[in-house]
Length: 619
Image 1 (cartoon, one colour):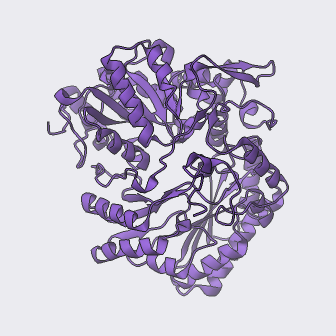
Image 2 (cartoon, rainbow, N blue to C red; image 1 turned 90 degrees about the horizontal axis):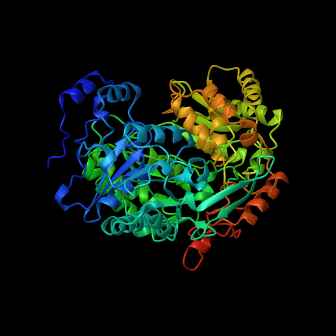
Image 3 (cartoon, one colour; image 1 turned 45 degrees about the horizontal axis):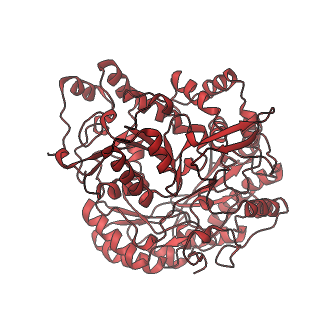
C-alpha cells in the first residue's frame, strides 16, 4: 500500500472545488500505513477542528506514534472538514474518512476524539453524523465502534456525557494502550458493550458516564452524582510518571500544506511550578516532570533531521522555568545555527528573562517577544498569584530593547476576581511605561516600536482556585474594554480584545453539567460546528438552545458557587486536593501570594501521584 487515498470521480470533483484540498488527501511524508491483513484493531484519531489546527497539536502527534507502535493496531488521522467540503460530502453521500486509507471511519473499531477546547463539542457531533453514526452513546448499542475522548476538556466530563462511551482523564500515552488492548480482547471474545464499559471503568483514568447518575436539587444545583455498581468513587487522572523516557514523535507526519505551527515543537516538561490561580493547565498537568537537556537535544535534532523543518520551538507552560534551558539552547544551536534553523522560546517569564537567554534566542533569527502580566496592577497580580512584579517586566524589556528588539506583545485578562476600574487603567499605565522605556533605552529606533496589548475575558475553570467564582457579564466586559481602549491614546500601542460572547459559552460548557447535552445537540442541529472560528460561532444560537431547555448562561457562567456545592466534575480527581484549592481561593481574596514550588512545597497533593511523592518542582 502506498498510502495515497484512492480518489473516485465524486471525491475528485469535491477536491477541485475545495478552497484547500490538501487538507483532505493524505499521502504526506511520514504518515503510517499498515497492511490491513495484519490488523485486528483500527482506530480513528479524530481532531474536531481543521487540518491546520489538528496537525499542529503535539498531543495528537504523540498518540498517533504511541498507538501505531502497537502490533496489529492501525491508528489513522481524521480532521473536521471546512464548510465547503462538508457540504460536498453530504451532497455526494460520502462518509467522513481517515486520511491514511480513505476508509469511512464508521468502519473502524475505535473512534477517539482529542478534546482540548469546549467550543469544539458541537464539531464532535458533526463528525459522528458525517460518519453515519448516531451522536448519542445510548443510540449506539453495539460495542463497535467505541466512541471516546481525551484531552484537557475532559476534566469536566459531564457536558459531553450523552455522546461519548467513555472519557480519558489525564495524559493518554499509557492509558490508551491499556484501553485498546482491552478493546482487542473484547472484540475477540465478542463482549457486550456493558461488560466492556464496566471493565474499562477499572482502568485508572477512565470515566464512564453511564456509570454515574447526577441528581438535582429544586434550584438546579446538583444534590449528588451517584456512582452506580462497578463505578469507582473517584476517577484519578493518569500521568506519564517517567516523562524522561516517555514517547516523543521524532518522525511525525510532515503536512503537505501550511499549518498553524509549522515547526518542530519540543516538549521540555509537563506541569508548572508557578500556581497561577486562574490557570487550569497549571493544575491539570501537575505534578511537574522534566526531560533532561540531553534527551531534549537528542529528540529535537532527530525531529529536525526527519522533517526538514527550519524552526524549532521549545514548548511548556513556562519555558524559561526549565532548569537546563541554557544548556539545551546551546546544544540545539550547535545543530541549528550552521543550518540556518531558527530557535524560538515562547512562554517566557518576565521575572527570569536574561541577557544570555536573549542572545541565544536571536542567534539565527529574531521574532517578537511575548509576555503575559495578566493584570495591570500589583494588587491584582497578587490576587491571581502571578508572582511577576512590574519592575521584573520593565527590566526584561529594557534588556530586550537594548538588544535591538522593537516588537512586544502583552497579554492581560479582564474580569478577574476583585478587579476594579483602577486595575483596568493600570494596564494602560503599564503599556505607557513600556513605550517610555523603549524611547529611553532602545538601541534601534529607526524602525519604531510596536507594542500590542491584548485582553481576554476571564473564564472560571474547573479544578482551579477560581472554579467557584462568577464570570462578568458580556456587557460589563465590554465596558472595561472601552475604558481601557479610551485610555490607550498613542498609535505605537495597538489594542486587541477577545470577544466576550465566546468566553461566556466557554464558561458555560467548562462549568456545565449533564443537562447541557441537550443544549449541545440542539446547537449542532441548528448548524453549530467549528465554533472556535468566528465564521461559525453564533451566540444567539446558544442562547436560544439554553432557553429551549429552561437553562441560562447566568446559572453556569455568572453565578458564584458555594464551596459546599456539589460540582459537576466532583467525581474527577486531578491529584490536587480540594482543600488546597479552597485555601488558595482564600489566599487570593486576602491578596496573599503562594510561593512557587521551588521556593517550598505547598502540599497541593499532586506529587502523591508519583512514586516517592516528589515532583520536579522541588528537585
